[in-house]
Each structure stands twice: as structure tokens, then as C-alpha cells.
Image (cartoon, rainbow, N blue to C red; front, side, top):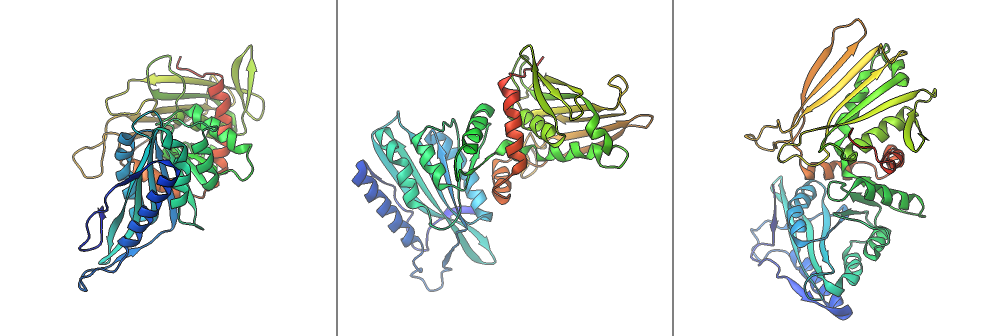
Length: 399
């Protein structure tokens, strides 16, 4: 369990505010003093002292205070297992007075009778003070340790706040659920053209890891492995309305499949075509399923592939169907999208194999924690997002 706390006998740190360049400097000085005060030994000798641990900086930028408040418990849960200094900032250039306000507190996890604590700094930036947001955040970073920038909402690479913070970060974590796959593609393309650019990742990439694993299982044995190079047809299903474009999870999944199997993109009369390494065409279909309440738009809902020498008589047919909103809600740590997935594999002249798998709770903290534990450099993601760029650019839509 994690909860904001302060040293024994102390009061929660009060918020402070200032405007102007000098005011921002005074605010930073006050916050740094609050942080020092957090780690003073308690006056009561019997009280358990707080132990500060910091392995990385986690910077979070949100376009509104409301979104930042909803995301704060996510960061608190992550820092319970990844001790860090978290700097959470809402930046609203078009709202409120020209000011920066902030506060600092400790977020502690009980472990072996000791209070192992991370630091959380919260900033609210309004009006013209937004131009100084990046410098304020940078001044509060712990030096000489890695920094992960979690950017929520729309992102533009010519945004000076993003440019400055990305320059200090070793990785930038986006979530296309808050923005769009086009934004992620744009940022990834920008990073490829920059010297010493941070690594870019999308939380949607972490969420589809289970789909990648289940798809690879179709080709696990020696009998079916050669069929991976003979895929003739793919069908992706997502929770959306008919006519919608391909979503982030579907685009990344298709990008991963294409790059792993050596496919190439081409165009005929302006229409997108996918070809295998041997030059044969692959038929791609995008379908929609109803989106139940509580399920995110464009959630990946199903997958089907066929492979063989003759498209009309496939030697392998595999499918993965997600029963949306089938999660258990009467147990701890479960959500309505901790869904059941049905995996089926049918080989020529063989009985179909079926397995039912329950996904874990779809919690933002879990995806962020797993992402931060992964190596910053993910070649498969970089290749998949570059491949997905062609798919999104050509506007693959639900038929």
C-alpha cells in the first residue's frame, strides 16, 4: 500500500505559488526546502524515520489539473515499486492567472517495518507562466539519474515545453489512448531525425504484448513454423463504429507482424498493399465489434490469420477473440476489461485446439510500471511504429 505521508509530528506541506521568472525561482527554493524538511529525523525517538530512495525521475505532464489528479494515484502506485522523484505538472496556458503553484510530499510504502519513500512534487501552471514550466520541472530533477517523461494528451514536437523536457529525458512515454496513433508516429519520426533523442514508447505497445505472445504460439512447433512466411490473410477486429480508422493497438500489432515476417508495403492506384517476403500479397481486413460501456475506443478485440500455399485451402487458421467487458468486478484488482480471451488453432486435417485465458486487470499503473522496467531501447517498437506509419497514412478503415 502507498499513501502520501509526512514525517511524524509534521503537517502536510502547504502549497506555494509565485509568478514571473523570479517568482518561479522562489517557488523552486520553497519546494526544495519542503523536500529537505521531509527527511529530517523525527522529534520522537520512538518514531520510525523515513528512508528516501530514488532510482529515477518520473516527469508527468498533463493538459489539465483534472487529468493530473486522476493520474496521480497511478504514479503513486508505480513509485511504490520503482522508487523515484515524481514531478507531476498540469500546464494550462489558456486558463487561470499567470502563475505556478506547487507542493511536495512523500509517498511511502511499508516494507519490513520501514517507511521506504519516494518524493512527489505537484505543479499547476497557468497562463503565461506556461512558458517557464519546463525550466521549473528541470530545476527539480535529481541530477545524474535517468529521467522518464510521461506525456499525457496531445503532443507536438515544436512545443517548446515538450522540446525542453524531451531533451532532458532518456525516454518519452506516450499513451495513444490519451492522444492518437498519429501523434505517436509523428513523435517517433521526429526522434529518428534527432541526434541523442530520447527513446519513444507508447503504452499501447505494452498492452498488446499478450497478443504478440498468443499470435507467436500459432507457429511454435516445427510443423507450423514454415507457415509463418506463408500468411495469406489477416483480419483485425477493434471496438469501434463502422467506417472508423485503425486504432493504436491494431496499427502497432499489424506493424509488429509485418516487421517480424519481413513484409513490405506498396501501393496500387493509391491503395495500400502488403506483400510477403516472397512477393505474394497478403489480404488485410479491418472489422468492428460493438464497444461496451467502459471499454476504450479502438480496443483490439479480435484477430484471425490464415496461412498456406493455397489461399483457398489454408493449412493453418488461427484466431484470438476477446470477450469484451467480461472481466470480474467482484474481486480485488479486477476490472470489466480483465477479459476472457479465446485462442483457437486449426491445422489441416486436425481437430481444432481451443484455450481460454483470463487477462489481468487493465490498470494504468501496471502498464506504466512494466514499460519503465523494460529496456529504454526497443528496436521492435521502433520498427513497428515506422511500419504502422504507412498503414495510418493510407487510412486503413473498417470495411
